[in-house]
Image (cartoon, rainbow, N blue to C red; front, side):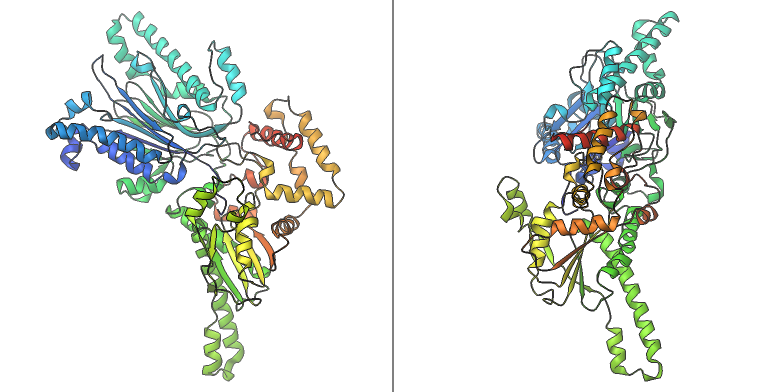
Length: 633
């Protein structure tokens, strides 16, 4: 994606199933869990760079000792800072007496992060707030072990205001309205109720108070707690949590919007946002890493029993397709193949755009994350070249000569690295408000890679969101090579609608496809549609979310995808551009064929997986018309 957007946090959970002595004997360290957590988070660094946090729960400590450790940071190098802080404290122990590093009992009482259960989180802020108090894991403390709750997640809820009111109805007095605090307090409320229910049950059975605490821990019904807590949530979420005595869970939304994977053997149970993270960290094969099913929770009891339990009835599966196009690491075998298919699917449209003139066309890609899709595109272009060679050879028949055979066999796609990103310049210009000239030089071009006025230039991108970088940088700098035509190909369809499930794309005015449709309505004397959509959206403001209809679809209805793409190309072409510019987008049908298990496509189609999505998109349109630059949820 040439225009990076903030998105999708990363989660990591590790539960050690063996005594510490096992890991010391087998792996030579008392910090096996901590080191594996570090690696899991490092391998998910792509999922969050606004902050990070880790937490650890120690089992069966005597009263008077801290049993939950937590460190968070919102610095520019948060992940590095967190683990440097923890490792420095360990080094102090080593310098004092290195033998203590092999004394698991001593470490558990005197060193942080030497417990059995670890949680980690990498954060991308989706609405600008960066305070350390917003960082996960968040903690709800209590003197009762079984009432302590640690929570971290990759989520966004659309109905936070409604949930806030319901917390008040439960008798609480929340001090914040964020979805993080709402989730924490909602789960915390039902955790408290479960504790009280069990306390009264065991008290009536004649058990002593000291004895009851342990009995509560053994009998906590996490499935019931999570089911009651999440029944009114509208959004996408993958949440990991720990209870102070040692139970843990990982919960996924009923539409499967946000990703979550787990692995289990006799030593560990682990959860992460991406499959390759687990494969790499624990050196395990692909087929052993399972996906947590939508609407289910992976529940890990303190005694080591693990089960995947139904929490909320699953809805139609709408797993996020952007995960496959861009967000997740391309080292997942399925994602790798899907991205290749996305590139391959663009071939017919690109061939039409260059009038099938392969001899005079150069292919390239921006940015590096588009490389796998580019490989798929080139594989298919190679197939096209092979068919052309075969046809030409058959046509010549007996008149085939070494000279014309050599010319035929030379037919192949021309691939060049025409643009290279200047990362240091980008770091600098983010601090400069008046930066248009510098923006135009984010990329360096390879002079001599294009024959001036003769060659077409095809550049593949993951997706096109705002079009700002294309307009002010990429197209301007590519035009200096003086190609006959510049074709920008997007492996994603047109982004038309806001996201409300964890991606920083919540405002309609950020989308170039939306502006193209608005401009076309005005240019074709259909501006009345804009006012009609506004009135329809306004009329639904106070309706229950289940009754709301996405009226913003009407903005796009009068036009074909091709008409909007052509308008986008015109908007990206500033006055000084000499080359003809064309934009080619992925079709929705081809996206679904390439990613058959991830059909969550609401940013392209407006078909939201939850009722709250329709309410959000209408609110986003109202905000656009009324000039409010705020997120719609």
